[in-house]
Image (cartoon, rainbow, N blue to C red; front, side, top):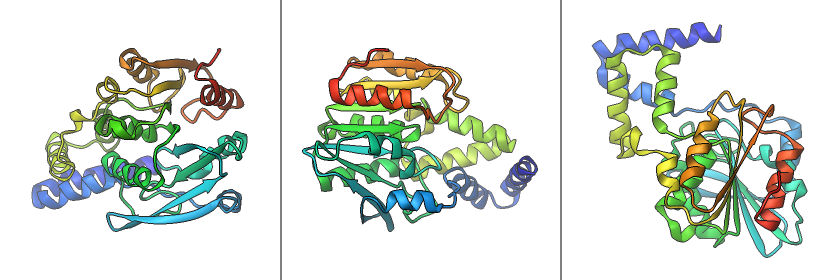
Length: 281
């Protein structure tokens, strides 16, 4: 059923480009940038309510943020696409709250933040504003598009870079998202051209500009990349390429944990790096 609906949407956009091309471009772009917001369960909310909750405004949206602990070392957690702060529960539980102050936020259109739209540059603006409010960081821990966002943010604003940056299962190129989206919806070349033109007008850059390996060449933080060789959403080759140009990074390749990397072993790798900089694997 989902596949039929996807194909139907693609067919509609392909037809719309001939009768209302501007509308087709806008609709296509908004679909591309619209995350599906999953239902918050009692389990999710119980964990989120265990921390101090606060919010701030950005670009007309309310961004939900969280805080645990009161230690002198500050850590920021950045989740991935169609996720939210609950994905970090194992890490929050593992961190010493007397040693660390742990911050997390829900990206626009995710979790308990408002909005129906998110791009990586928008997520980066939110991260920039948040760091401006809480001050310099010791560590940033990120997953998937949250990792891409972190790499882009600290390429763009090296003065905000943390001492340590952990990136789990990052994508590598914005163009990959365009290609996947095009294939899923079976979009015509005309539709893709209109949507990409709209993307460039809104974001002020072509999709090809957004390349994690290119951004990583400028990173100064000590880095840890973890990627699973069976990741079906973001190829492990992205992390290999990022690691090859990130001068102070370490790469761990796992097997059997998939894109989400939900494993105590991964948590242990991250904790070792946060505490000691070097992970033995």
